[in-house]
Length: 228
Image 1 (cartoon, one colour):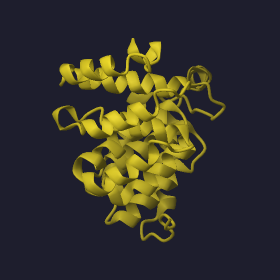
Image 2 (image 1 turned 180 degrees about the horizontal axis):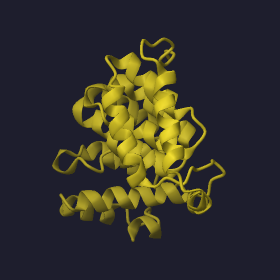
Image 3 (image 1 turned 45 degrees about the vertical axis):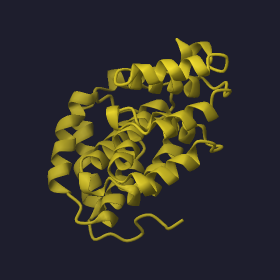
């Protein structure tokens, strides 16, 4: 596995310097505790909700646009490595902002974020908007990697393999969806069972017959949570 973004021409210190004071400026410390409690995390919050982060993301997207993949990865990681959850949300938002670099070439970066993030608020965004987008655009090499996650010992990678096609609608690869769901039917983990139900429900909006057939074929194996 190659090292990510070991050298960059972008001044990541300037990026961090642009983000942290803005977050502090709009922070509401009274909300920080409840936000952390809702996410069941000990990671600190500034107390900046999504609306407050949007303007900051718009600024850094304009002022710190990457010239190449190396700068893209370095900027994402510079934000991701900061201690507050809002900074990591901005890292994901920044990563989503540059369509050119959302491809199989960025999968190692996205895998790192999934493994380190290891919670639904990070992983679901990465799975559907980054991994899923790379899969849609660059299916061949991306599918190879996503398939390797189906039986990973990392639960959040398995969840990603299941929900990565949430936004694909008629372009959903039913073979991949079937394989990802079926391989994980017996997993007792809540987040896996929920992912299977979510993925099937979303695809049912496009192809209800396929989903009915899948559910009928696997009725005995689907958990009540997934079936519901």
